[in-house]
Amino acid sequence: MKITSARIFLFSTILAIAMSACSQQASEEPAADASEAAVAETSAKPPQAAELPRTASVDGAGVFFISPADGDTLTNPITVEFGLDGMDVVKAGDNAAHSGHHHLIIDAGLPELGLPIPASEHYVHFGDGSTSTELNLEPGSHSLQLLLGDYLHIPHDPPLMSDPITVIVE
Image 1 (cartoon, rainbow, N blue to C red):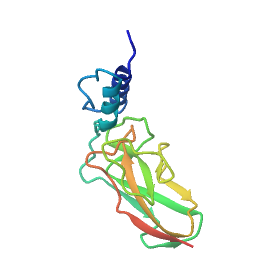
Image 2: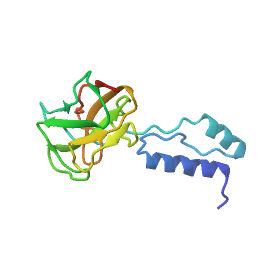
Image 3: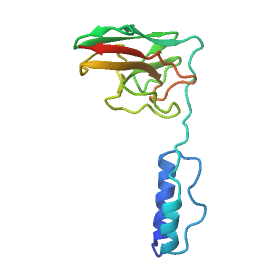
Image 4: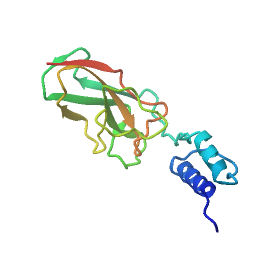
């Protein structure tokens, strides 16, 4: 079999679709030659990630901050305590009914709710099942928000998130 740019493009597209659980293909037919493949490659839209199955949340359940309170002025290290009503906190990977684990969003917006919550300095995972942490934040104003994730770090349906709070670090 002759390996052409069109076949490489087609293979790359299929691989990207499979890896991102995409439900649509970028191209239905491979390009006939290298010049058509180049045009197809530049004009094809990147695959969109499909939403993954989401775990149902319990009616009336809620996620909230025990501390700090919205508007608090604090000094490092900051102790943050998470609260959860109506469901249980478990470790990531534990697929127990009516459960999840906390994610702390720092100075960022909500992630895409149909996908696993990213892990970074802005999206801190507590997959060990912990319900508190200590943070060292730069002086200034910071937003904090909690988002509960299921055993695969995917937000529940409907998502359980706290109201965002703002704290001032001196």
